[in-house]
Amino acid sequence: MSDLTVSVADGVALVTFNRPEWRNAYTAEMCALLNRAYRQCDDDDAVRAIVLTGAGDAFCVGADFSGETNPFGAPADDSTFTAAPTDPAAFELRTPVIAAVNGHAIGIGLSIALQADIRIMAADAKYAVAQVRRGVIPDCMSHWTLPHLVGGTVAADILLTGRTFDGTEAARMGIATRVLPRDQVLDHAMAVASDIAVNVAPMSAALSKQLLWETMVNGYTPRQVANLETELHHRVMGSTDAREGVDAFLQHRPPRWSRSVSTDWEPLPKL
Image (cartoon, rainbow, N blue to C red; front, side, top):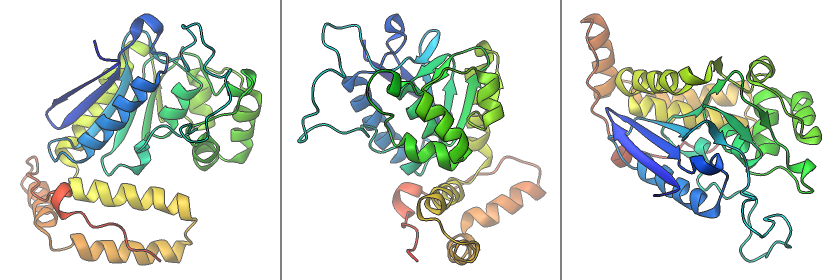
């Protein structure tokens, strides 16, 4: 069986870490499959939202230590090693990504979830960016995602101590979008994804997501964001989807979106 599975139905791609016997401990093969799945889903107009979860009772408990070789024990080969193996990262996609963190997420497991747009997390699971307790440092751009999501003070607490916390604290710190009993996490994430797939115009979601993350990356001022919002409105106002969105609202029916992100996409303008 594959270390990662993908199923698509009704506009939602369910991407699942699939090593439940090892609590979905991270492997290079798993990440390669995730990268491929992200790219394929993002280029498929039939996929309007992505849900990332883990098989069994964990999301991903971090690096795989089940073999005889310590994955942190050998010096990094400069020609092949990267601390950011998720390529693309979830925030680099045009498609909304929801992490259904259905159980423990440790180390790179949590770092990968931090790259999602929305995180639905299990209340009683354990979470940590624990790499400093293993003699290495946090990865997957967590030194960028965490401070942008929760601020420098909370990020320092999480990254520099490597301590463990639960879902309730994750929500209090702003890491979790929502916290639920673990048996409700995936169903809720799928419901959110289904709502996006039906009711949100794909091009609008793609543009809004890209502007949101680009603003964090580039530190745009409010007026720069206003200028970009204006430019992007010129792309969508008067479009078939803009007309359809209003018609569907007035007629009390589900919208029928027609614009194609895969064929009509243009990158955001640069300031």
